[in-house]
Length: 265
Image (cartoon, rainbow, N blue to C red; front, side):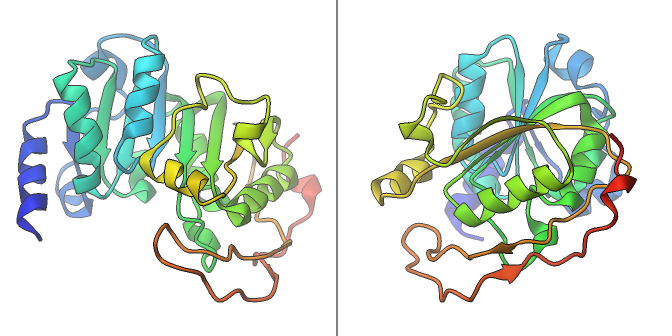
């Protein structure tokens, strides 16, 4: 690990609003704030909103500044990036923001039933080869419903057409209520204070001419979330500065659908 990263990790250890729980630490010690974030940390009963894969934390901090009546927690495993937002919010004395360094797969170890009101997925890796790793897959939907309030809201903001179309199909096949959708956020009527925050990488994608997609929907109770079976073309680019991908032909996203009558209404 580089010296600069070590310095950032050490500094974050002194931030009272940062919790670093990679797998080895979680395995050794349970997380004592689970189900107690409101009273034990935030000291209020305002809605709690998560940003998963928060990166540098710009969106977490930006939302917390814009909506002081809500509490925000940014989650990512890459602490060196998270340091940026953690340091900014610490220096600003913000009391409605926190950061959690851990794997998103362990999210139910940190939050209790109905503890979260909304979840933001901001520019996650589309994981085109592995549907189980996509943050909007049925695998993660099963986790989200365990911690979200009834009718909790999920937001997806992405530059990836593949992930946007996949998520839209997942929402449709599971009969979830769509609240808002657009394939070109900044040339639509959807832009407001909630959506106008731009991260460092988002601004780079916009300058490359990529459109930003947005989808929000309700995470409703289901007996079982299922995967869509649909052909979706892969994105033709990598992350900023990494060139282009070899584009395979359209493919199915894997799992055969069960009888939709088995889904709860």
